[in-house]
Amino acid sequence: MKVLAVASEAFPLVKTGGLADVVGALPQALAAHGITTTTMLPGYPAVMEAAAGRVVHTWRDLLGGGTARLLRGEIAGQPLIILDAPAFFMREGGLYGDATGADWPDNWRRFAAFARAAAEIGRGGVKGLSFDLLHAHDWQAGLAPAYLRYAGSPIKSVMTIHNIAFQGRFGADIFGELGLPEDAWAIDGVEYYGGVGFLKAGLEAADAVTTVSPTYAREILRPDFGMGLEGLVAERAARVSGIVNGIDKAIWNPEHDAALPARYSAKTLARRSANKRAVEREFGLAPGDGPIFTVVSRLTWQKGMDVLASCLDELVEMGARLAMLGSGDPGLENDFLAAAARHSGRVGVRIGYDEPLSHLLQGGADAILIPSRFEPCGLTQLYGLAYGCVPIVARTGGLADTIIDANIAAMDAQVATGIQFDGVTRDSLLHAMRRACQLFADRRCWQGIQRCGMKADFSWGKSGAAYAALYRGLIDA
Image (cartoon, rainbow, N blue to C red; front, side):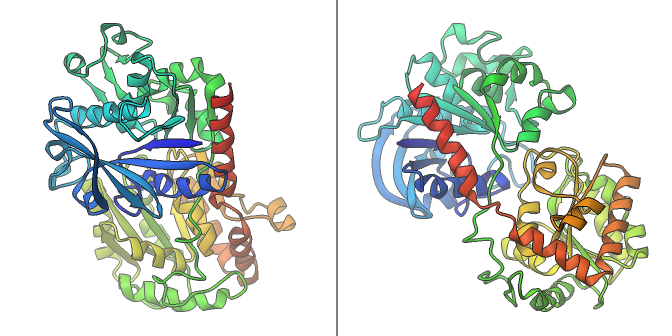
């Protein structure tokens, strides 16, 4: 079976979040099931460096963006095709916005062109490329299943929601420039609250819809999680499934991680102390034996960072320390920087993102805080499990599906892997952190939780098998 995976980012070439990790890792997992996945990416500057140089197709004018070429390449040993459309993607700044953080005003055109090219490839319009199924990821690829549908293509498609909060909503004025037939402007087409919805279009047109955890698949049926799309998700419920993301054990493995000063396993946890000392040095924390909590996150309301910011004085009073790596809302960045200034040696903050440093934090901190108000799947808690960095998580989405709370029954059964709490409030988060400090004080108990987490299997094996079964079910139907 041959699958075309269409996404706006993929690790290791280009990454802003968990989407890239999933898109980068899934092809290898599917290969074990006889499925060849070709990933299609926009031709950002970093992606163009991976191009092999062979042009396989040319569009003279792709959706008003001038000449665009399709190039072959390779990503992590798997086939890659790149949409080289300089007017759309060869620009300085971020993938989706400029250096100030403002969205590119032509994002609708950039990703409509990307999706249209993907659909043309998927339906056999590019010589030498043929596929059995198209898998679109998030709103940036959401129009691809719609273009297939309105072209009358028989190829099956899957639409994956990585975060339903990001939908690609644009004004009605762009519809006439998308190259879709008039009947696509309908409630069962691309029209969405009087405008055009890219993710909504994909959810309507795809043969199957997936999201990245079973709990999140249920949550998005509710208005407080569905973000306006809960009705459509409910209508298509028979076609919606939740498949938990995996992690790439070749990259996230404390026994072989070059980013760690000391490598270790569940049997050699004592070696983590050298990494803890490195975290202290890197973040200017005073040396000590008390717990270091870490955060590796976007600093946003969704991630509950406003609640965490309100708890930092109490966190320090508990005898804990915090090492934070992240960026996001400027107000929240300032709140955490102010806490670092207020609690020098107890709170360390690094604004930005640094992949090796994120590995060090997982390998050296004692616990990772993830107080998300909603979390489709989450990957940082899975990295925490693999590294013995105990996750402290809100009971939502994939966090609820992947972490076993250290309650009395779970501790007695020796299956606890972290700490869960209900409701992202100041009181609930403080209670969870106090629980963590109490458990940490019992070294044998804490190491038992660490080892249970490190034994958990969240590799791509199970998830890859689930996607392979979904694909085959669609093609054989």
